[in-house]
Image (cartoon, rainbow, N blue to C red; front, side, top):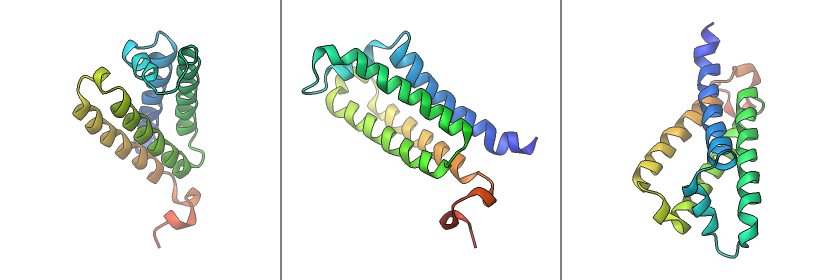
Amino acid sequence: MADIGRTRLPAAAVALMWWYEGFWCKVFPGRADQRAIVEGLPLLPAGAVTPLLLAIGLAEVALGLWVLLGHRPYAAAVVQTVLVAGFNTGGLLVGADHIPEPGRLVVQDIAFLALIWLVAARRPADRAPQWAVAR
């Protein structure tokens, strides 16, 4: 039972965030602000917006599943960090007009990244990579 609060519950929270952002915000029904940000990408043909949103959304859903399964959590944390930083930096650069509170976005991202790394660090020590095990 202690494992639920220590590892599973935080992992479920991270997975739910990815599923919400991926499925609800990009696939069904999709959010207009996220569509507008993608439409603002330079050199992206108009017909590519929907397929790109679908691909990103499904990748985010898959990422949530990866987190929930707990396989290679440090690799998952690195991938998530790169994606959170990249997506939101890109959004702020090309779609700032569609982000009502950029400061809130950055603060929420910092909290989300902290939770992501907490999940990675909370895996059992016998499964952690050698460089991550305290000696």
